[in-house]
Length: 295
Image (cartoon, rainbow, N blue to C red; front, side, top):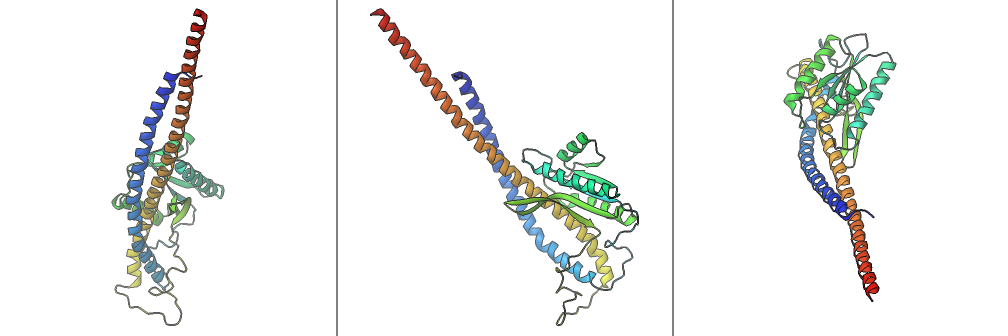
């Protein structure tokens, strides 16, 4: 039978842990709500921007500096991997890293070198453990801001234009809904317009009855402005969705930890009551035995 004092100390420690996990769950919930509002607010802008780009890309426009096709015949990939700076979020980082490593190994097996740009302390620590080459990025913080992501997007576009990278991919946790988040690797460059997104947009091939637009300035100049903006907003959206998914994973992990602590407290309380009852019974038996011996 366990010692009563040890059971009391252990139950007190578990109660303190439950308070911490419960607090972290509430904090993650508040942060999720804030991040979800930012993702929802950015969707109309990104969708309309993609619609405009798809419509203009359907026109016969010559671009001297296009982000729609590679500028080098030598294949080389650049991959941005988005992980978290903090732990206690379940299998969030493990799933992202597994998907990213599968992509990197697949590119290497096909003869395409891959330059990895690792975002987040957890991913950096894991790649250091694996002794893989990477460029470390740990200054973005837990809340991504556009002015922090924009220089990264500009650097990736500059490398793509110089031919240092023929493709650019982003590995992150895609947010679909509260109950569904999946790790994905999406292509950032060269830009691949959706075939069905701009069917009724400017310049799109919408068939009979399609509205024809006059552009000022010319479509080529518009694309020169819209294509870089599309790359920036797509990369920023990846960071936002990764942040939302991280908070959901932390909410789920901390709720599971809180529930497990509650179950452990109940089990320790039962063990303590049994030990206490056994101690009382033994004391009563000693008293009865002593009284019988005196008689």
